[in-house]
Amino acid sequence: MSQPLKVVSRIRLKNFNPEFTGGMDKERAREATVPLCLRIGELQERLYADARRSVIILLQGMDTSGKDGVAKSVLEFVSLSGIETTNFKAPSSEELAHDFLWRVHQAEPRHGNIGVFNRSQYEDVLVARVLNLVPKSTWKPRYAQINAFEKHLTENGVVLLKFFLHISKEEQAKRLQARLDDPAKNWKFRQDDLKMRAHWKEFQTAYEDAINHCSTRFARWHIVPSNHKWYRDYVVAKTVVDALEKLKLKWPEPKEDLSKIRIV
Ligand code: AMP
Ligand code: MG
Image (cartoon, rainbow, N blue to C red; front, side, top):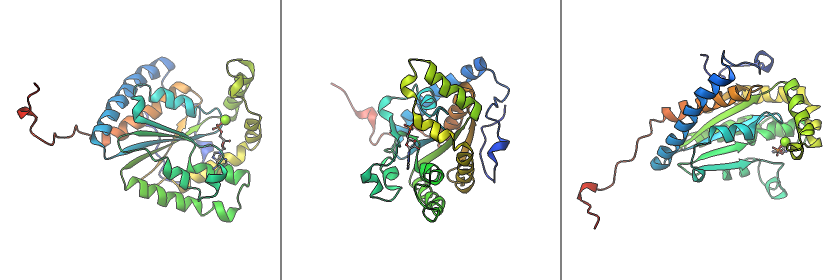
């Protein structure tokens, strides 16, 4: 079975098929994913006991790409107290009064926890660039600033896993249409999503640049084929398990001789 992709060189998104399923079907993917998700639950407990490191699952992707959905599936068996989720929205006036990484650094999870970044620092080189919210002279240097920031985090105990949920424009059309047709999904529909959709090409270019400039040895980008939700969940779960297993987390040694303690 092919491994989730780890980008190490220059990529073109058009060479990545969002329909890709690695030869799996829905049933096999689900069967493989559940044990991975259970394992994430166990490994987070060790991460917490060890209390020296944290993990960030950073999710980017066009609207409807499944950022909420994948977090919900993959973290199903993780203790709620071990998860810190941050949804990065358009910056508040307070956030705009600081440098763009200020709010991101504040969202760093405590040691022992898994942080979910639903959008992230990358919005500042994605939407900010595509909608001209800031001039090029402001967004261009941000790639290097982001790399320096991510290097700092990873040298200080943070494991940073970055996922681009790759869907096709046709798949987005289907999912937006479902939001219009299904009364239970109507609330998710935003006119703004259509405005963003109109800039599809520019967003793909901006994503390509972000992936190419910011796939570093300490924090690589993973491009996740996401037209099929079950394959998307499998790839993310597998990547998270592999990263956590690599930490070789052991239960901490007791600080005193527990065999001498009597409970009366
Ligand atoms: P949603 O994730 O659908 O709730 O939407 C959040 C919105 O906030 C998206 O349209 C993002 O593009 C926008 N957003 C997030 N971060 C930034 C940012 N740094 N600058 C401008 N817009 C942002
Ligand atoms: Mg949205």
